[in-house]
Image (tube, rainbow, N blue to C red; front, side, top):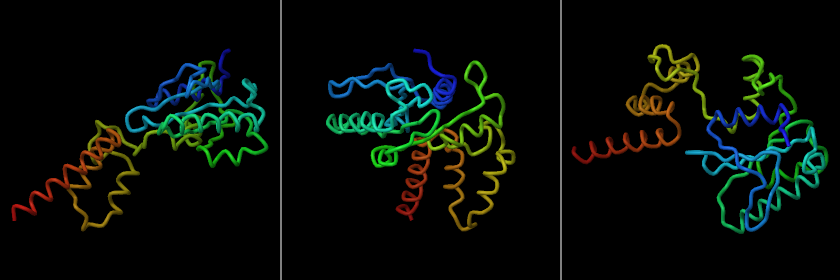
Length: 208
């Protein structure tokens, strides 16, 4: 069955952010699970499992809050049985479901995207729409510090400039500079930069 425009747009945005769409139904602990769409993260978000529930068309009973909750809770239990460390996020694409969806937040992260102005290919029609869509799923997207990696420090964007200006002057500038430069490469690069600087400081302390 073809995806709705909103579901297509969400999938495209998440794929652009590094997620991979899974074939559905997928099997966990010998049980088949059917969702409108499912995506898995990569690298630092490799344990993220995202489920998209299409509340507009109601495929797979997705207009029934009780059925949706039961299916997701069953999946959560199946993941527990297999000792999986996946972190579940459910995106409700379309009208917010009424009923016992609040109870679902104890099982997983629940996001709601009621609508978005998209073109026929599922792309936001302008930058404002794109930003509004990102805001609704921001927790799933890489941190954007507002500059191009190729830019010089002076042009890295107002957000980073203001952040650096607000930091106490007594902080380890080598550490701050290393973390800022590494941040454009993701969480793992930041961790490596932090480890490198700690190693330098500890080595220096030992030698003295």
